Length: 93
Image (tube, rainbow, N blue to C red):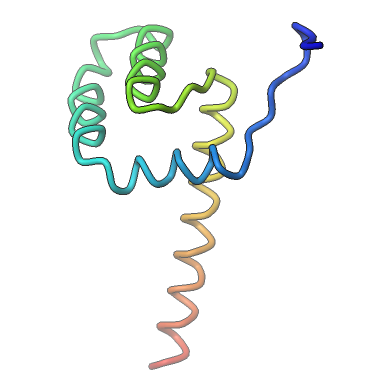
């Protein structure tokens, strides 16, 4: 039974698909860039609605809370990779 108050968790596959689409889907990236240009003219609610719609059109059915979680995970992963790259660069010099 699905309880309406229970949050749906994200699977590893969903997180991987999200990152894969952001990294490899040129059409999605172009549409995200176009949406980003509209940011100043949209309310946050409308911007997020359009953002989620773009992801749904590309097979990523997520809600706003899941989007926040995926973006935070991506941000933290980028920070870790940047830190590792910086440490690796320092070791080679």
